[in-house]
Image (cartoon, rainbow, N blue to C red):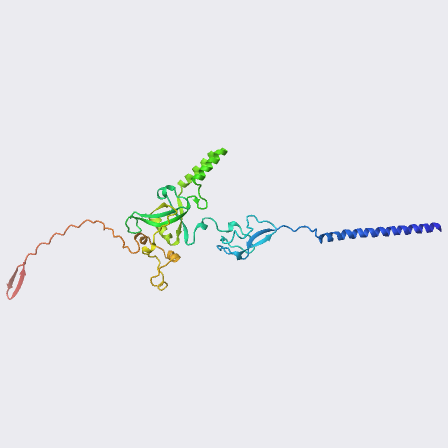
Length: 346
């Protein structure tokens, strides 16, 4: 009887111990489950992923369109875009070279750059062939101003004109000369000397001298010059280069004197406007006049000048005809035969 009571007591103590252990184990599991939720909702959360500012198109943009503030915007992207823009200041006023879709990043390659940005409104960049004798001995540099003279020897078949030389374009800006341009000018004499001095200190003077020699040789081998020409003078320049001789006269940049076109009659155009489209006495202007075109004979002889008449070719004179022999008067005689009579002249 006592043994049974002892066993019953031991079983009761064991049951209480197991129950207490189960309770403690359940509390530990609950704590482990709640802890991540509490940590996630607390102030010690992990920082958000970094973003990068990239300028993108705000709407469809056509090729050749000048960018304004409404065309572009800044987007925050999760990754950096190489060669893109992070601010809009550098893009306002630039012109696109291709069409862009909305939200597309903008790159430097999609914007017009180069010599075209150096041409002022109303001008065109025109290339002309050059030689040392006609280009101030190759002393012309990009950015200089030159006077373009036009020479005719009178032997052209395009029009009957006298030999002449006259100023064709005054104070014309040189945008490029050979491989050098206003964007990539050749080094000046002072810059070359400084480069040689620095190269002498580092022991690479031979390389500097070779580069200077190559630059000078490139200037001497220049075959073209690009000039900034007003639109209304482009056809005059192209005709003069084709049928005559051009010469570039270097002038001081502070000399701003130019001829007064109002003193000379306007040259006639190839195409004539439709009757009634222009007011009486009104002339074609700007692009309309350039579209109408120009004849070389009008460029060479002027608006009011008459064509030059060359003396006719000398021909061999014909021998005079021999004078006709004087007429000999005729004599008459009447011959009677019976009742008939006949007059005979001899």
